[in-house]
Length: 269
Length: 198
Image 1: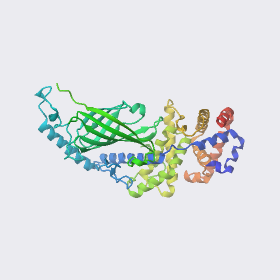
Image 2: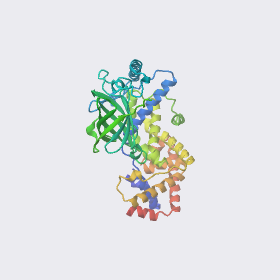
Image 3: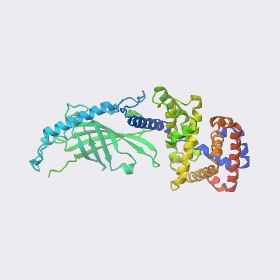
Image 4: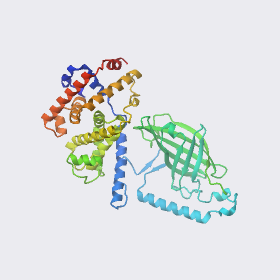
């Protein structure tokens, strides 16, 4: 910095005030984690540009090469995949999922005219909302759909489990807690039992990036069905320089809670 | 895109390829590691709001990413600097059009330890310095910031900005004189005392 060379500031003998003022500029330091955030944002921006260019040129959309530091499949510490699939894999998965959904719909949807109580639990669980985990199609265990989740500490969430193994959720605490909607993946691990992991971004009060929060969830259906669920969640906050894929890198104290939930369903008319 | 316009202005041909190759990616990572703090400081001192500085740095690196095959490694810092000057200029103009935007806050200071009074004094003084720098013509300001605040020599700045040495030296001299005159108009004694004693 300039102060290291006193000769450079000889001209400042005319004004000690300006000397002090310029000294203040040395307190200008970038926010912590700038480099890591830039690399991440640059990669995202390059990806968007590459997609945009390919789309304009009518070329197939292909992800740019992934560097060794960012593997295509990111395994979390507990084996639940946070997937970064190639586009063609995602496209095929979507088609298969749609086909499976269509078969289920046409083949097993009960007649709506069956009446207000026409959809018994057993039937309901065999239709579109019954869920055949994309990751393990043979397990036929969990239930897709949207659930209103009440944490025991009082927070309310809406969690939506999609057929393709993704999970999206929103929480009442997002505004007050300055964090984003949550995105993640789920996997059937037993009859009516699912494990999931979801991530969200947290912002500092000035809007800058603060941390990534990872929440690991275990959820079970009750009474042999999926209409009511219970479970546990545990969360960890990963600040800049910490890797959400490795649980032991989180320096902040983990938190945990239990919850109950019920599936959001269209009322029979 | 504005960054591409800037790249053309400084004589870099349109992007021939993306920095998608392993070598390009590696070079970009290295540039981010080596220059991001320098660019952040320089952009702030050239008048970019602190809250916007990170976006501005990203904008600069995106231009480098697009042109990385066209920029020799030896010219990389100069290239980044010239793009940064353009980005800062655009953002200053945009800021003048939207004066309602709040400037720096104390948020960035929360972990640095000083007492609240000292923080306020520091913020005021920093804003004063920013105003003084704002009064300088941009070509004087950039040379002044690089020499007086980044510690580069006048020949280094002349080389980085492709200026004759005499021009760089003259801009530096006029920048110094301009700041001395501006400070003489102000009475900073009380604020400096508050900052020193908290």
